[in-house]
Picture (cartoon, helix red, strand yellow):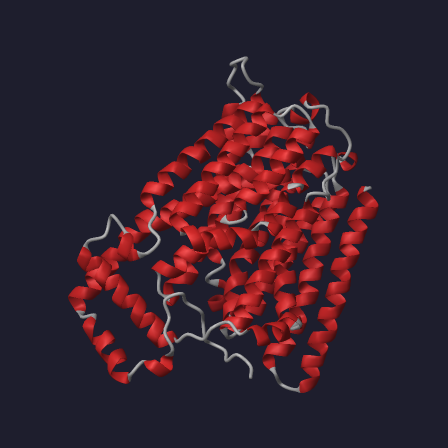
Length: 489
């Protein structure tokens, strides 16, 4: 029997068969006008503590991922004796352990709780970033990046779990959008901060070493602060009053009763793993991550090769970061404006294709920087709109669990592939890298079109077309990976 659409998971949920109508009525009636005001105030407190702390952690996560590219323009490559493809290899080494570490990190998260585990891994990845200030060669950086990927693997799943425990379903999407916007916010402030750090003249460290040390120390310190600010559940909050805790608990129980709960079914899991529509959504995020990681890791490098100084190139990373931040915040409104997720996603793909085409076609610096802003706007927007499309179409806890896992995996694979597309041998135009972003945009369109045919469900032939086109897209992703290996090595 298939999962029914519109049913969602929740750790605190109960079966709707065990919930009487009297309970639903009394739960709704209990939230009178005064309670409603107090409930809104309680959620504002949660926003000011839990959500802001998670956003702050994600900003530091984004900065720590981007500091390798910012350090390259500050002289890292020359000072450590890297040449050829060494830098790209170092960038990519984070993602294998990032993907492999997700399952054990999630198990540890459930055992120790989000408060302890998120604080611990934040301190650990901050310390690892500090260690990179003492790296002397490619091998040292590879080891640090491997450990960094393992440490960061539990950050996003843990934060998303906390959001679902503290907020009802109608608030979760907005909170997740704000959480993901922190990736772009990290790009906004990371470049200017690195530019300022480069002005430190203390001979103890080189300028790029100061970037790793100061940003790593900041992250580790913030991790310690998280331990005192976070709470696993509303009942354990140090900020909320008893009456506010009771209101939040009652609201969440009402939310679970209205939404219902069905456990993940292992028998249906294998059916959903073979579902081409789930893979099509994952492939869309795979494509979007090409642009996102281009902005986070390679913007300063691309701008530096345009002829700008290292300090200016770092500071100018803020411009694409701002556009990405605006793009991801606006993404929540696109389905309403365009009346469908498909049209919204197609709009963003058009921006991505246009941006990549400009980067390929011109050598004018102003036009190329503007195109990087367009690339950031569309890519971060696609990341923001993806979860909404998944939640509105997956249906059922088993299907949703499979979809979420594949989305994360394909996103990581997209980041891994991006590590190899901007190569030293292609400077200063980087035509291969921009061409791969163009290909990602076209592939995204090719994957989205059969989704529209399938969801319209006008006839059985459309489902056949969806499956056929998605198989083609899988072949194209395989071709993409092979092409990267052939051209890189």
